[in-house]
Length: 391
Image (cartoon, rainbow, N blue to C red):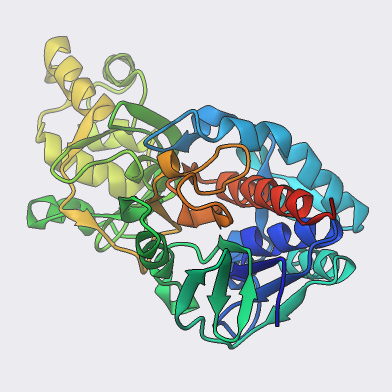
């Protein structure tokens, strides 16, 4: 069969690109090896899909070219996607830090995208291996099908149990596009044996400020049997480089708080002072790490200030991450220098597009990566739709 566009991947980016192009008059085929569309959407946000964020800004995305995201995000905003959600009657609510979720199920978002595809006459083939891809005479051939436009929307290798692979990079390299080395992002960090004390408090969480790679995030951290997790850690993991330390502020204004505790309960020990502000098990672990055994009233203020410094800059040197199996997204990917920021089309090969997680664009935790999927998908879909209209 001959189409105007073949889209590889029935995830969020691929489906919205297909719907946009189809509704503009293009004949579109979506191909995916998965048995159902939008599998990552279905598991996101605890099954309620954190589909975008009120605070979408270009500075919330990582890329070798941080300016690349500006055009697509401006031309299809979080408000545009929210308008689509509301037009389909999907109830939603805002949680912390501008995160928007479905009141019901993430499946509502998938059904919305499928309905938009139906309106555009899009053909979707599931459980279909992509196979070999060729390009000649201005046509991309995928199996027996051909089209002048091919969209890489197969995502990255994060969450392989959902069928994720690195196929996008192989396709890009096949057609001469550079790939920024991919790595797990929004991922828990692992700690070595020297951090045994903190592994022993697995399951304890508390608000922190996490710092690494010139970035900082104020959210919750979770101590695990492998290391560190929780929103603050997932966020900072995207900025962390192997071998680098991360610093956690587990207690703000710690020195002044300890001095106040010394005046209030001079016969207490450090653990009791910390337990006023932190979970008991964490307070115990921190007191053991700092190692002050005397009563607070017998400790000079300078010693308390030094303990406070530890609490405001608790340093860990992760041994690594928990890998793609636990990564929410993939950092790196198809080099944005190879693509038009307006259309997502490859500069070297007209008709080839790359969108979503396949591209070297990684958003913060909290709906940012979905918005990039929507914005980049619409950018490509509009370009294909415009090119497919009769002269």
